[in-house]
Image 1 (tube, rainbow, N blue to C red):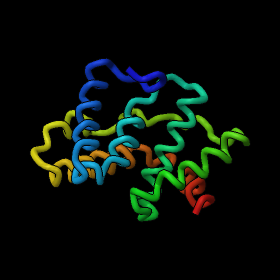
Image 2 (image 1 turned 30 degrees about the vertical axis):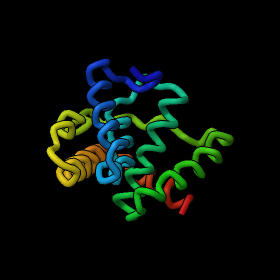
Image 3 (image 1 turned 180 degrees about the vertical axis):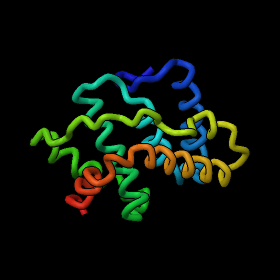
Amino acid sequence: THAYLGTSAGCWKIYGDVLAKEYGDSEYMQIHRLTVDTYSLQHLGVESAKTIQSMNLHLMALCAAFDFGIDYDFIPRVMNHRLREYKEKNVFQWLTPPSSLGKMTVLDVIGAKNSTEHSELVLAWAKNVWHTWKRHHEEVKLLVKEVL
């Protein structure tokens, strides 16, 4: 399993299989950014500095994609800029996760029959998870706006 994500060995394996599809085929890889952000937000570990950082950055990535229309390939630049600055200032805060982390999971994605279906499923999964965090949207938007 992962060092600070809260995941079971079985779920981690399925996620690894999804990542293998993405890394192995450029058509699948186009949506990779959202796969990582979405899975991470559904598998937050215990409250710690690493988890807080992960939570904030992955929420920023989904916000950048869905609320600001930032291209998936550009999102890591946004995240890396914020990470360097915020680690120094210790700005990231724990955001209480929603009681439900969404109706979709990585299990909905693993069965995709082709890259188009895979992308559609990851996009739906990511939007669903972003929606579950709606009570924190405004504070996450402020973090993204500071970068843009």
